[in-house]
Image 1: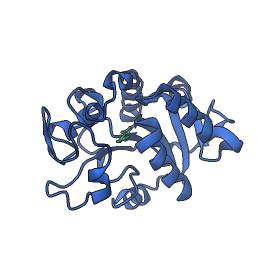
Image 2: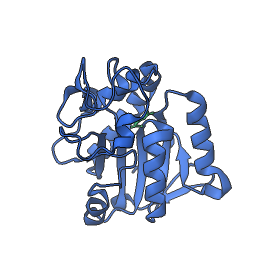
Image 3: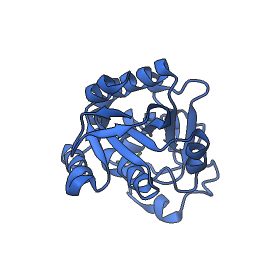
Length: 220
Ligand code: TIU
């Protein structure tokens, strides 16, 4: 077992059974004209997480360790999008509408793509998901079981929405989860801070948090 200097206490992980999961680093959330902006958010707030996430990807790629990317994206006919999700938000554009990066949060559209800096490489698993959590209505559990993964290191956006939801889903399924503090961002700094605090409260009720430098320092 290897050890990361984490909160609320040291996080131990077996190298071959630990995956990096990068949640929804998509143009629709990080760039102007997408879903995040349509909801009234300042998308520049998510930019600081890009470089630390890239550093984690580089480290996992260099060691041949498992990497999973997720994308919040719906079928073109929106049959996998619940009506409640379509109606929510009342932004300038909603899911399926045509914006400057194509149809919002629709599979295959330019805005649904992962940002170029963090684009998946061949062989890396990409999970498209219609929900906020990556386990709902996806084959993620099966892919992790095939890989023998028991531990998950989380990066991505947004901290309190898709990242936290997926981390809670994973925690309930028995995965040992760590959220990399500087590799995640929210449109609301106070929500990011609260999420990090609530994950590691009560003895790590949802899991651990650590900096990307602590994670990189722990890799052989
Ligand atoms: N709105 C918001 O903060 N997030 C989302 O809608 N999706 C993700 O977090 N990926």
